[in-house]
Structures are given as C-alpha cells and as structure tokens.
Image (cartoon, rainbow, N blue to C red; front, side):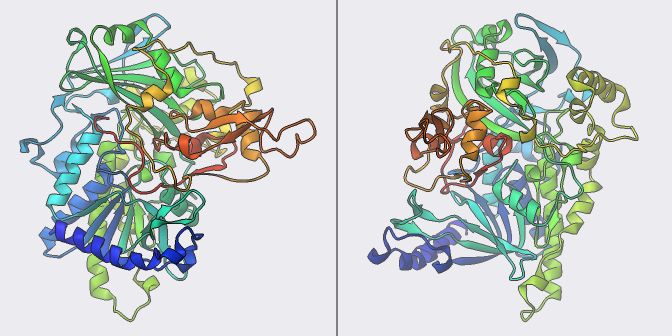
Length: 612
C-alpha cells in the first residue's frame, strides 16, 4: 500500500512539475506567486520524523483500528533517511514506549539492547575526577543506553508497517494559512532545483502543499516553522522565552579494557569555568561503544568560548584520556541544540488547525537529562486529541463551509498534557535549571538544586521566572569585557581539528542552492556584531565551521564606514562552508545581533547520522 501511495505521489508530482521546467524558463528568476503547486489532501500532516512525530503517527494508526476509521497520516522528514538528523546522548526512559508499544521488547529488531547498570557523577578539576552524589532524578534503573538515531529509525519502520506515509527528504518549509490568516491548513515543502541566486535550474520542481485537517509540528528544538507559529499566534504570551544548551557528542569504540557496558557517568566542572552552566557525560553503549559529550548552556557570557574546543579539551582530562586509550577509535561526531527552559518556557501548544509536539514545544527534563519519554508521550496525547478532532470534523462540517470554519480545535491536547505525567515530570524540577539564572549564581544554583532535588522535590510555592525575558543571545557580553580563552592545538587521535571531526557526520548539501542560513542585510550589523565587539563570535561558536571570516578588500581608511566588515574582515557564508552545516541551530539562537535565521535546505541535505 505504502509503495503504491509513494509511486502515485511521485508520478503525479513529476507530471505537473514538468510544466515549470521548459527551456524558456531555465535559469529564470524564481517567482513564488507564479508557481502552480501540487496539493495533497491528508487527515494529519506531521512535520518531523523524530520520536515525537513517529509516536504520534503510530498512536493515530492504533486509534484508527480501535475506532474503525481510516486516517491518512503523512510524516515529512527533512533528513535523507529517518533518523539521519537525530542526535542525543542517549539514555532512554521507556515509560512512553511501554505505553505505546507494550510488546516492544519481544521484537527481535528493537535497538534497546543495553540496560543502564550504574549511575554516578563526578566533579572534574583540571586533573582530578571527584565522585559526588547525583540527584535522584538521574537514577537510571530500568533505562536503556542507545543511539537515538537508531531508535528513531526503528520507530519509522514500525510506523510504515502500520500504514503511515513517511517521506524522508521532504522538508517542511512553509505554513499554508487559511484565507483570513487565522488558521493553519497545512504545510508546503521547499522548492528543489534553485541555484544560489534563486534562479530555476533545469531540474527545478516547485514545492508541494500538504493540506491537512490537523497539522502537527515536530521539528525538534528551535525549528523554523515552530518559530513562525509561536510568533504569529503569540503562543509564548504567558510563557518564558525558551533557553537552550548546545550538546556536542562523539561515539568511540573503546579498548576492551576500558569498556563497562551499562555504565552511566555525568560530570560537572572542568573544562568549563565557574560562570558557565554545563556538564559532560559518558554512556557505555552496547557492542563496545561509548557515547561521550558535553552540554553547554547557551546563556554563557564569554564570546571567546568555543563549544567544539571545550569538548576537545575535555578529552585530555586524565579520566577521559584513560577511557580513550589503547586501541580506542572515534567513529562519530555531531552537535545539536536542546531545550533547557523547562515548564516555565512551554508555550501554548495548540493553534487553530494544529499543535506543537515534542521538542518543538520543549519537554526536556534537565534534571534527568532526558526528554525522549516526554516528547513521545506528548505525541501520543496529540494523536488522541487529533483523532477526536477528525471524528468531530467529519460529523459536523459540510462541504459548503469555508476552510477557516473547519479548522480543527486541538485545545483538548493541552488539557490532557497538563493532566498527564509529562506535566508532573516537569513541574517537580521546574526550578532546578532556572535557579542558575537567579541572583544565587552558579554556586547558589548548585546548592539550591541539591536541596530541591533531594528534599523539596518541587513542592514549593514559588517558581523562578525569567522576569526580564532575557534570551540566550542577550547574555553574550562584548569580548573586551571577558577573558580570552586560548585553546591548545589538537593532539590526534584524542583531539582533532574541526574539519576532521566533520568528516564523521556524513554532512552534505547540494552546492548550487540558496544558502539556508539567511543573514539580514542591515548595513553591516551582522559583521559588526560578530566581528567587532564580539571579535568573530560566530566562527568560534559554530560547531561545524560554517561561518568564515575573510579579508574585506573594500575596507580602507577612506571607506571604513562603507564596508560590510570590521577591522579589515568580513563575515561570509558561501556554498563551500555551508556544506558543513549540521543543523544544530546554535547560530539562530545565540548570535547576539539575532540577524541569522536558519531555514531548511533542499530536502535530504545535512548530516547522515547513524549511531548518534
């Protein structure tokens, strides 16, 4: 059935799209208003094939069977394969999985092969690893160490077996609004075959519209459509600004003498200074593999900090250098932003015609350092609300009614979410991460977090709020006010330069396409902001080396005020360095001038994660 649907979709698309690629129109400027798009009608369109989106799709198919209905469910995934853009630690709490697929452990193909066997925490100095108590929320009894990329791929296989239409390589690029602009009717994918100047190549095909009765956004942290919808419908009016961390990860096949299957270790302290929130992890996966990495809160102040170089420096600590000694070999690298705002930063999750699910809304439990269970459960609850809405829509509306009056009401999803264990899971720990951004500071935050997690357990009449509504970007100080950080040169094989690491991501984008990192052109504001007072911030912050600073030939004593650069340099993003982008979203979140916008590239472009 799935193969027939896909062939029908591809054939119909190719037939219509050939109308737009005649010789006369080759390399002509692209005019969106002149494009005739193929439109597919579906019941539910899910943007994002991660754990939340796929759990939603699977639950909808279960409800379809229970209710004797027929729902057409489409999942659009921007990665070339399901799971290829997924990166996490990851220790997975199986609570939601047990509810969604009670017999999952009897499936021979499931990827949760390594139970967690121990959990410890260490405070690192530059030379010591001192054992310290860990919060009870970090207990991992009953949890599993796994590759979230592989776990997601497995969920995708199950969804397809149940009849879900999963389309890898289809990036959700825009929202289809009702005529009055008050509701969402679906999404459109991006154009394929545009060159870097937005001219149509001979391979040009316009994006497609997927018009849905319910549109669910499951892009992950800081997705482009999520940003648009949150702003348009003012979904964050009663919530704090979302805050983020950047997680950098490597996977190593370690020497057998250093392998301890099931061991979970978290670290705090070195290499980060006392002003910077963050910590490391070491998870001993199945098959002799070890996942290790570093999360740094993106509210860090010092623009000299380089997340990538902090990770490389961390591996030279005696604890890590011993772990990675002998015949150990690195096999994977990646990075991704994650939500850290907690319950206070969860926006209103529904809008006319759809809802935000998973990390698009932000359900990571920072005290547990886990979010997959909450993301999956949110998708399951959204599926139940969507199924109810579909049944109501089919019974109550008529063909003659305008589309705006037939917008599905997903408010029941928010109510069920607040009544679920997801909400209580986040409520208990709501003040822990937030305490680090109070007058208590880092050390006060550590003390408060210990008291709250061990004794108070969230049972307090207060909730720490971001009353100033200060974003992560606004925390960044001018370089002149901060101590410059000098990083040691790489010492292979333990630490390597960034480009060597990037070869392990499998990242690829078509070179001659529009740059998907859009910088506002405002008289050099971007360059002055990241080159001038920030002394080249973007080049250090990006964990993929996308931003390049080159000599500005137009800069002279006479033309100093006319150049786009500063101090003889300018910031550029060209097709060669854009190849490196691993879709982490750091630049969109952290650049102080907030004039870089991440958008989806051609579907299928980006990293090719397989073990992350």
